Each structure stands twice: as structure tokens, then as C-alpha cells.
Length: 421
Image (tube, rainbow, N blue to C red):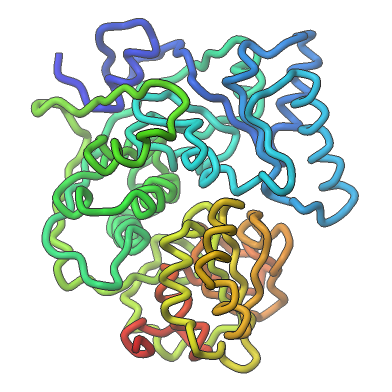
């Protein structure tokens, strides 16, 4: 029976030789993930069920990244719940401040997740790990509690959709632009409970950072997961990093898809998602008159080293626009240290930007950059719903780090070509 890569991974974790879309399976998980918003609920359910120990202390990961450093007493208490549980359970994968990074950048970087894994996380952007050739999906806190107890999850096998990208990618077109383009084409419910499989020569030429950005935002199309078949770039990324043996899968040539799309992206401009949905996309050149109050560069979507490199390239020797706030969030301490070593902190600070420790911060309207009524932000984050980053009467545009950095220099949404030296 021909299967997609997603179906093969689910079958392997369900003790079956094959599965098909619509099947209900009871699957073993490789990693169960929670953060400082979702894990306290799971921990409470875990305790109320009378369960004493997690099924495997090396397979439960807790990352206090959303409201840390703690912004108030309530967030401090949330983080303390994780800290106490991790210590009591002897969890291998718990990171305290100074080691902690944004979860969906931290786990791939640290080799906790890898090709062939089945990963669940009580966070919708768990789908990020599909960039490594894993089946990764978000679940509720009660599902996380069950997985922490028994190492299994109940799943309905999703249909798959295939997106093939051909042509030549422009110099400023990143994985973020490709996924925004895709969501603009199919809509925020266009892949509802589907596995979005990204393929084609353009994908094969994408660095891992860009692949992670693409799979991260599969959920913004309503998808169950996003995935890219492992190749030489995947193998290079996980070599010497992964804590378990990888398993490399690919879709069969005759695998069945619910829908297929083929796009030639030659000539594609950087893409911007306008308020208040990620599907509301337009080429950057059509938005040059939009004034902005704040730029945010970072998040689990675009806080990796290549993202900061792009921002540093454009900001070097320049100043952010007068009256504009530019906030930069390295996604992990390792990224933070490397950016410092390369002199980018000096570049950012001299430009008038602020550099934060790793945290989700303003992405979810948490802290470190909340918008006031009527303010407009351009962000490299993944969602721009009404009130997502602050006041319901504020607005958020989504773009790549290149567009964000260029716009920080002008105070309006700007094509990178306009400011590039």
C-alpha cells in the first residue's frame, strides 16, 4: 500500500504496517512537550489522576518560554509549577533561565527532536518539527497529561496535501515568504486537519532555518502538521546533534493526496500578511505607504541565526526611524551568544534597537512589547489576529526579517531593496 511520509511515521509508531486517512490509531510518542502556559494544566490533571511518575523522564520536555523572565506574580507561579514538577520527576529536558530558549527553536537545536519522530506538544506551533521529517502536532493540555503518563496519544490519521515549489527564489524571498504566499493562496482553513507536505526544487534548496519557519506556520492554514522529507540538508543538520537515531522516511511515488499544488515562485516578491489574518497577503511593494510604530524580529518562526544575520546586514551602520521601536528576540541562548560573538548586538544597539533575552514576549501579547490602542506593528511572528499583540484596536502585519529590518529603518513597510547597500 502506497503511503505519504506522514502516514508512514504514524504507522511505525502505531505498530501497523500501514494506515490510511481517517484511521484512528493509538500511537507511541517520542517527545511530549509543554510550556509555561499549557503544562501547568497538564501537571494538575496528571496529579488529579493519581499518577506518580511520568512514563519516561527523558521523553517529557518542559520549556518555560512564554512569560519568562516572569512579568508578574501569576507568570512566576506558572513557571514555578514547571520547575517543581521537572525537579520532582527528574526530567532530562527542562531548561531554566539562562539555558531556556523559545521551545520550537530550542528542541531542534538541542537535538531533542529529529527525523522520523512522532512529537506532540501542548502548543499549536509544535508542527515546526516537521521541517526535520517528523510528524509533529499540537494537542490540548489533557492530551499532554495522558502522554506524560503513558507515552501514547490517540490520533486520527490526516489526509495529506502536497505543495511543490519550482523556479528561482529571489534574493529576499525566504521560507517565511513562501508560507505566507501559500496561506494567502489556500486560506486559513485551506488545510484543515491535513498534513501539509512541502516539496520541489525550491524546498530542496532551502536552509533548515527557512524550513522550520515554513512548517511552523502550517497551523495558520488550519493544518494538523507540516512536513518536509529529509534530504542532505536534514542529514547535515542532525549529524552530531540528535540524541536518538534518526529514521528517514519519504512519500511513495503513488501516495494519495487530498489536493496538490504546484507553483513557480520565480519573480515572487517578499510577502506581507495584513491585519487581521495570515491569509490576507499582499506583495510588499503594494504596502509602502503603511506607517508603523513597532518592529518585532524574533519568535519561534524567525528568531534563528540566519534571521538575525539578515536583520544585522540591513541595520549595520544605520539608525531605526525616529519614533519607531525595534525589538529583537534571539530564539535561544546559543543563538544569542553567537549573535553577540559576531558583533550583531553592537549593530542592533547602535541602530537604536533593543535586544531581549530569549522569550516569546509580545508574539502572543504576553510582555516585552505590547501594543497600545491604534498602534501598528510589523512582526516576524506567526499570527496577526485582532488583539494578538495587545490592544484590540492595534494592528499587526507579518513579514520576513528582511522586510522587518528594512521597515524599521524607514518607519513604513519597505522592500529590502530600497535600503540595501
